[in-house]
Image (cartoon, rainbow over the protein chains, first blue to last red):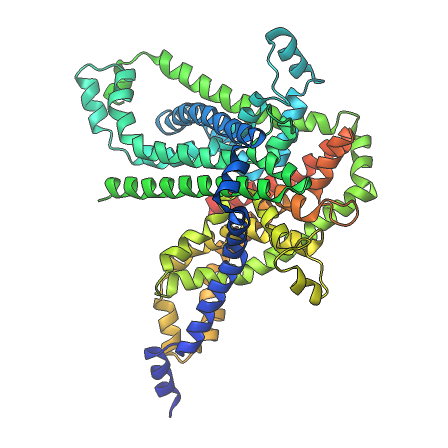
Length: 284
Length: 270
């Protein structure tokens, strides 16, 4: 067979099927070994003593307090982040002003800094022995470090890019004719924003908020440094798991881990589903 | 000028810009500045001395070793997974695609804990690991596994769009000219992937350097053996060695920042 004929033969049948199969098997094995097996193990361990024991571990007062703290701090963070993220995206897309490039660069910093380093930064700035921290506590009675507000602050830092970066491209693509029409009809800028712009942003906004919420409930590094580990006060679910591992309470650690995994995965799936829907309504 | 801008009062806009700039500065820049101030609180000499101490050097060395191993493994398998995701059609592909993002959703503490369940005392794989005479829990191999888990998506997510954009035409042309599958991959596909590969590697690197929760649980943070830079910072805070903690945090933060920002600048230029 000539070289040209061999070339033609391999072009119609580029790789022998077993090669393709081997590559695919390797990819699957890598993901299953690294991701799936560990998660199945935790599921098995948490449910090994039955559903009753699992529920008892979840509703144990200290565990439930940790879960509740995790949820409410993440809710407060998400609310603030949704408002400030929307405003930031709006200001970045619609206006021209000095310092805009800097603002745009600052937003990505939280993605580049290790989250536990973020915790260290906040402790230095707001710690009770520091100038700003002690002033806040003395004059406003506001304690940030080793307290729930510190958790919210750390989460706000970490998730600032999420809403901004989800909204920015949508806002850029947005057709401005309806806004101009509303302005011509005499609507004020706040009315236009509320009645015309915001509804168009609703789906990506929800998806960005869900992503920051799901990021918030899993956070550990920044929180353990900022909030410490005070049961019933500043101990979040992730920090509770650490405590249970250290005191060798396997069921407690596994049960709360399962709740966290389920919540985070559910939220992430919902967020991507909404994102896909939003993309479809934008480019049908 | 747009109709909206011409008739509206400039004050709401000015206030909005000030509000957003103030928020970003207070939330992000102020803590960053505080880290600098904290690291140099006893003067440059004290910072340098803290960083030069053998414990700090050992911790950074371990962090670097783990990061390098993780980056090497993801370079090979990440490329493989991205390749399979883009070029193969098979049942279960959507599931595989969803799996890749899993590490974004799972808390690092949970990652460390599941590895402990597998490899710790009475762990499911403990007998296997003992038979092979390797230590995984409370040792470096476990910390590498934990870091592999948390950094998995970065390489794959960078490569998939590049592979999709590159298409198959050049590969088919090479095949027509008689190149083998391996030659095509090595000479045609890989050079086209190099930027995506480089970005993925940078992100993997930055994330691996800063991993904390997962390596704390699986590694235990034993000084001199399983203490990485993040664990050293954690311990130094506990022991009130503030200059050491803050200086190490500054170095770690700046290295990650330089990696990611440098990459972003490069990407914008291209």
